[in-house]
Length: 95
Image (cartoon, rainbow, N blue to C red; front, side):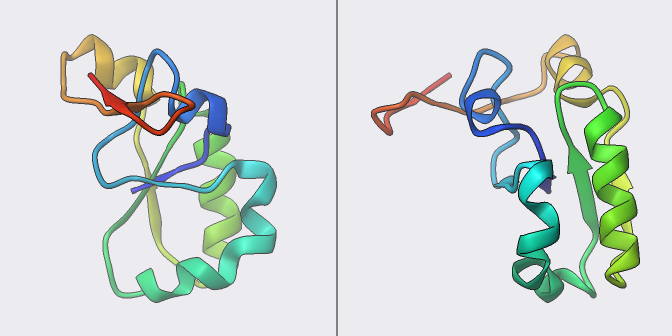
């Protein structure tokens, strides 16, 4: 799971999916090298809705990866009452 939200969103009120890696969409092109290890894994992009994650998926496809997009993003995830993690700026976890 690649969460392409901004760092403030990743730890913000909507939280993030446990195990997600935060790579903000504006950093994605510069950090592709970190993600190529997932070439043979199921890869899903997520953001607040699904606009940035769809753009991110295109960048990842151009790099030879095959991502899916979590439609509805974290808004839909939270609406479905699925579990999330949050981190405050001091690094403590909350829920």
